[in-house]
Length: 165
Image 1 (cartoon, rainbow, N blue to C red):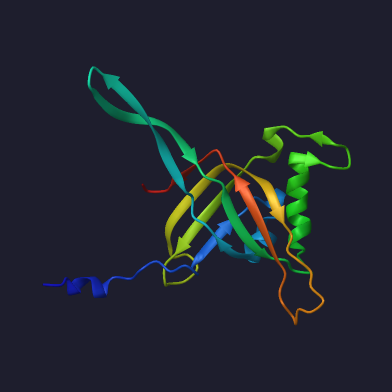
Image 2 (cartoon, rainbow, N blue to C red):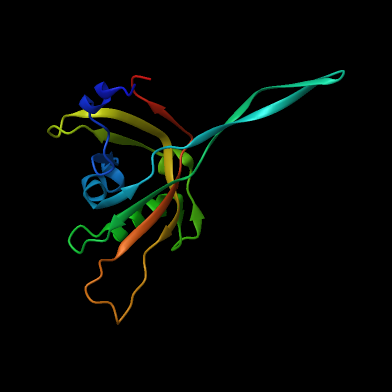
């Protein structure tokens, strides 16, 4: 017999999320520009052990996958410019100097929202030590009719936590 009680539960929706970036790397301008985002992904490597004719596995090191966000590139709050400022904290092409992690690694928060008002947070991830590793500023096309430019950025982070888990 089916469990009809499930029809009374609300599900999480893909379009109900915020991403909070630190104010020194775009802050509200980047938050308002986000179009899509992945949630943190990870896997734990396994290690194989042997004894005589048997084998078994134990957990190894966790592997946090890179994280990708897509942004609208606004004219007023120039998303590309804001992201490039963060990139320059990693590597400054005008000086050809690399920076130190304490300057470019930032903590980013991803919040899933419920169906209610803005404060209805149902899930929060803290991405620790986040920094941009690659950026695709989108393509230009004379034949496009009003197509919005989207900026795709891939980030690396040290690890993620989930509040309340």
